[in-house]
Image (tube, rainbow over all chains, first blue to last red; front, side, top):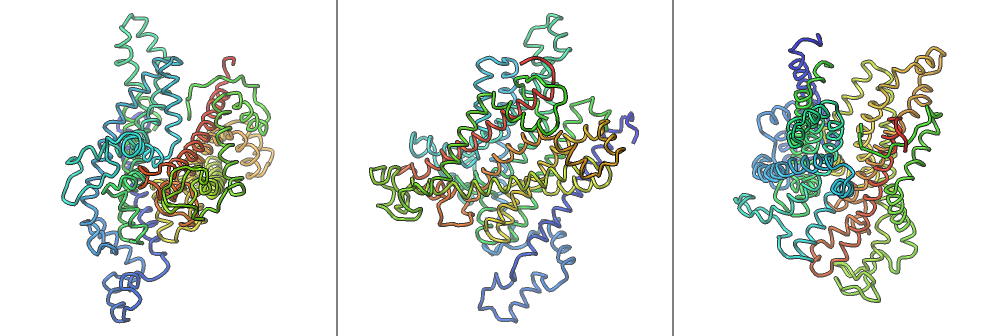
Length: 324
Length: 299
């Protein structure tokens, strides 16, 4: 690869894309094999102990369990690509029907949390760097350090205690979305889950932003901008901030990916009707098709966000392009 | 990796490798945050270890009416089944702590080995190992643990292996990143020329020189392991669903928060102090390591 060709960026993006696809294929092997390794017979699990051999055989044929593992995998993966995720064992309906409304609910939750937490944490981090070693920096740094260490479900239950059950009674402790309803129809129920997710993500982004901003503020070109007599506002917003954002993209994407896992616990705490609580229910019910589908979905989200992080980092950090 | 602005610690040239890890810990103790963190962790660990011996009742002994308020008989009141909250608190930390420490240690050993071998090999093995790590890292930690538990069952070893498995790639990335510049250094080439066996170079030269970043990452991972294991219990997936466990306690008593908050609040405080403590220790080590890595400026 010629490192000085302008198309280097595209080659890099293409390579990362291919790598992402390879990882996803390996992930699908892993998910399929893991769920295949289940002790016991899925057909018997569905039909129960009293099933006749004939009905067991019929169901096995229907589930393609009588075929070799490779062709079972192929059937599963092609179904996956066509949006056919199999039938839920517990709910006895197609996984897609079961999960699509929940997917929308979870997406709403994560999207609002992301839209709120990213600007907020960038602002906190940048301001802390600007006021380095002053009161705001000391207080925010220590607070964020402590918040970052708390597991999400602890944060969630503490918020419930404060705002819903014990100290104040201003917000609902349960955020179930009724069937046919949309999450935003009952927005007060969204406040605590979103607040939990914001607290779970913001500390990391803010800390990286602070570190990155400090490095930029100490650089020669910021010194230069100040010596030119530019107003501090311009120095901060036009010279420092854009340059400090490079490393932050990576962390933002990683944290959005992290939210995909974080919603499992947070949705469970608030009994929110999303894919996170669906995973918990599926695990308790041994509902393997649902687990397979959600594991693949969350892994895909993870891989795509990591890909975006790498590409965004390359695009906003020109000096990295030459190192491809 | 961490550019945490830290207290710059003066560095004595290149200290003998093995001393470096220990001295990093000792130096980090100069920071108040490390001391506070250590004190918090110490209190909670003591509570978890000694707790079962000093608990006034058994973890599952009914001692009064459900959800009764704190009284002389039950200092923190009773839970939703009428069991003593204080006794369950004293019993409920041990399994989380033991599982988290074992899982993190296994993940640390496996991850460090994989990362260092990958960095040292600099060939196809490097790519293969790190792509394998990417596959595991495509799952959030709790997702992989949930899949494992769904397939095999919520046994302690399943949870420990799942957490170790998801900890290893994250450690491996850090180990590889820290070892890569060291592999290029002259003293490695010198050792190779002297015919030192590869495993001796990896364990004797690379490992000691990457201990700083590894310790920072390990303390971070321990914080997460505690969180994930407690979260699994909170989701109803602990090895012993009826036993006392801080995560289980929070979930069981969440619905009666309005009546008797202590059943959930006491274990919340315990978990929060523990993870805050490990977080503070990790930050202390990170700050010290950042100072050591940049040998300029005085204290």
